[in-house]
Length: 442
Image (tube, rainbow, N blue to C red; front, top):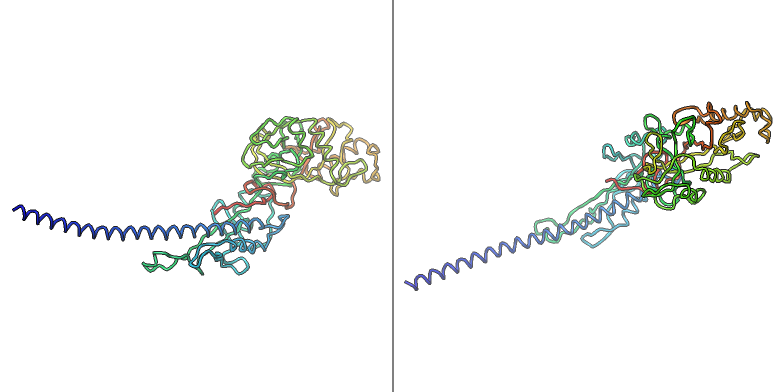
C-alpha cells in the first residue's frame, strides 16, 4: 500500500515538473517579448526626440531671421535657414545616426513654411507673403487673428528615407518604423529685454500710447507730466530694478545718458518706477537731449527728433506705481524737453522740428534772436508746434490750449510709426517693436 502511494506521489511530481517547464517556457517567451518591446520603444523614443530637436532647431532658426534687420519686410531666406538648421541634426536610423529628412525643395511648400500663428485658435496658416503689416493702430488681439501678419515658421523633420531600425519587432513583420515630428516657432513683440536694449531710464505708460479700443497708436503726441491741472502721468522714471527697489533719484540719475538697462528686464514682472518730477534727473535728461548728435538751430536746440526705445509699463488710473508691470517695448520720438518751471514769455519753444517751421518766425526772416518775435508770435509758434504733432495731455486736452503754468518741466514725445530693429525676447504686447528672439509654440 505504501509503495503504491509513493508511486502515485512520484507520478504527480513528474506531472507538475512538466507543467512548470511549460509555464517557464511561456513566461520566458513573454518576458523576451516585453524586453523586445521595451528595446524597440526606447529606440523609437530616442529617434522621436532627435526628430523633435531637429524640428525645434529649424523652426527657431527660421523664425529668428523671419524679418530683415529693420523689420520692414519678411525674409524669403528664412525657409532656407530653417532647412539648414534642421538637416544639420541627426537621428538614429538602420545605418546609424544620419541627417534627418526634411522634404523641402524651395519656396514655401513642403516641410518648411512661413506663415501666421494664432494663439486664439492654436493654428498655423502658411503664407508666403513678404510684406510686413503695419503694427500701429492695431491691437495685439487683432494681429493675432490676421493671417497676413507673418510671425512664425513651421518645420517637420522625418525619418522616412532611412526609417528607424527595428530590433525585435521585425520578428512580427515590422522591419522599421517611419517617424516624424513638427514644430512651430513664433516671433512676436518685444517682451523681456536684454541688457542695453533700453536707451534711457524712462518707462512709458501703456495707457498713453493706446486708444480706447486698446490699439497701439502713434498718431497722438503726449507729454510727461501731462500737466493741464491734471494728476495724470504718461510715464515714469525707472531704475530698471527687478525685483523692485525704490526708484529714488539717486538710483535713477546714474542711468541717464548711460548704456541703458544693465540687466535683463523681464516681461510680466514689476519694475522699480516712480512718477512725478525728479529735478536733477530731469535736468540730466534734458542735457543728454541737447548733446545728442542731432542737427541744431542757432540756439543749440535739436531740430530733429531724439529717438528712444523704452520699456512700456501698466499704469492703472493713468498713474505709475512704485513697481509697475512691464508689458512691452516702444520706440518713440522726443520732440521737446522744456527747461523752465514756467515760461510766461514763451521763450523755451521750438521754431523748427522735423521739417516743421513756425510761420511767424519764417515770415520774420528766421531771426536767430527769438526775442525779435513778440509774445503773441512766440505763443503762436507753440500752438503751431502742438498742432503739427497732435500733442495732447493724458486726458485729451490739446497742449496748444495750455497756459505757461501748465507747461512746466515736461518732455513731449510722439510714438514712432516706422518698423524698427527687433529687440529682446518674444512675449510682450504690440507697441510697434518686434522681438529678436522667437519662442516655440507647438
